[in-house]
Length: 155
Image 1 (spheres, helix red, strand yellow):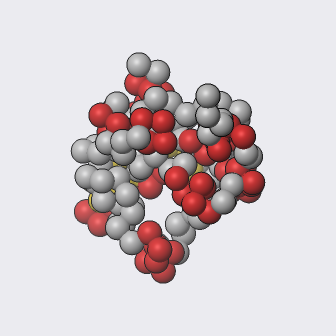
Image 2 (image 1 turned 120 degrees about the vertical axis):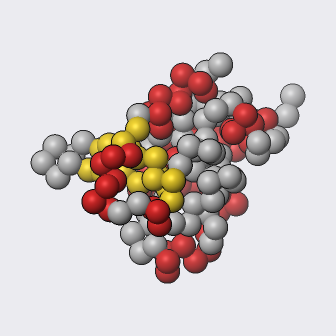
Image 3 (image 1 turned 90 degrees about the vertical axis):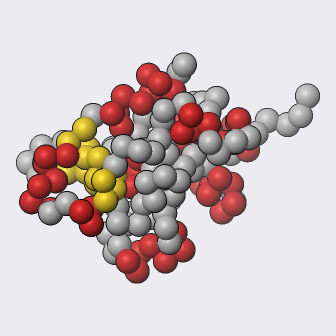
């Protein structure tokens, strides 16, 4: 038997940059715009993707320079993962933080970056670009599927 995979042996803070980056499954869910109620802190999801989200690959079109284009893009760090309540239930960063294993479709488990899409977990084919929606209309694009993909994940 081989050694346990790094995500079972290391905390998020102990991972190398390459290990950290490989935890991203490419679902694109974190790149969807969310609306937060200022009074309650409740977060509502939209199907509106960031201007840099590629709706087909579910990856950032300019990952190394994303914060120059999108200044409020949140750089995930172990500290940020601990504070963000809106990470989707299938997010590998959240799963590892909480001591859970990755799902079968995660590219680190399956060996195939397409399985996240084949399993119906990703945002592929479900989004519109924020470039095409007036910010005043974001409430018209509310969805709950980013929070219910976990049911698909267990299949």
